[in-house]
Image (cartoon, rainbow, N blue to C red; front, side, top):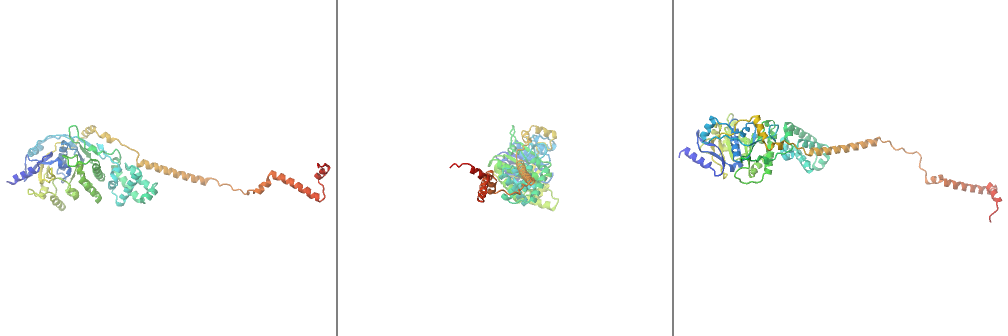
Length: 528
């Protein structure tokens, strides 16, 4: 058996599956395309995650477009990041040309232009349904990552979350967290210190400045309500096609922390919300994260552990996650080892570091007798890739050089009017355009602060009034004694006069002097 026949036999057997699958292209060996032999990926294994890697301009975006439009056609909803703005074309049918016809003729697959149902989402002011989340939904760990806080500052943020949770103070937007931070160092300082320990005013000031920085980067648009419901990512249209949710993040370079932490928060929300599915025939949702290195750059060890855990466990929810980046080395080994599908485009060897990366990348792929992988990686043309996948039993398939099919949708951006027409038909945009501002930590703490200030002002006023009141006058005249009061009374005076008169008469009588009364008494007859 010739090398070609042996290769065809192995590839045909390895890439033929019982269940439903998507077709990526045809195998290629020694420059020859094997027509009518298709490289497929079974739907059943697409919740085992994947990687699309390659240097700039090697066709990663088009490969992403090929995969999501086929998944949509099979009834699998997808969420994709549109970093450059050229993924919007997946919404409308593409147009054929001579190159596309030649490519599909060589593969042995007819080209059928078609579009997919699309829902546009946005984190900023771009056209699309606004994605929001509350500060509480992010939690202290991810929120601290956005702010780029150190360990001490992160512990203070955890304290703020704990205090607000214990006291029923919802943290919904950035105004809430700012008000809570101010409260901790002012009116609530004594209560916080007594229950949770002292908090440095300097640390609070640093965190506040970081919050303001995020606010200026558009965080005020993102944090708040209505929170995005991840169930809206798994919708199917009337034709049985899965919706492709295109997250328009063309300005993401200005706010990489917001983007990366949003993605982590969304993954955590999906994991906590979606029910256990086990091994299902096709994914419930596939998520494609472009510029994946933004998530892993400067991530702490604790955060990397969290990402690794989510990647391992979210598979059981029927969700597949695909990272799109320039080099597999952008992905931590612990995460890279969890990825079942690998689509590797060309790498460029311009420096010694590039050559090391290429050699390391080649070692991450299965051994093969048909290719020198490190050499092939630098010779791949546009629209070509190296593919390694899993069969329906989870066994790795042989590595193969694949001549990729063309996207069936437009390989270009939509015009503003086309985007507007799609947005006008959206069933969820009006839902997320509504801004809800219910009572939260800002309003509750503002009320407490006003109450505390009112009480303080009242106490101050009372103290001022007490100081301004005249002192009570003290009398120089002493209070009369009981004896003096008795002697001064009219009865006492009358008795005194009678007693005095009797004494005088008695005394004069002894002296032999007759008083008028005595004289009158002697002239009167006695009664006895």
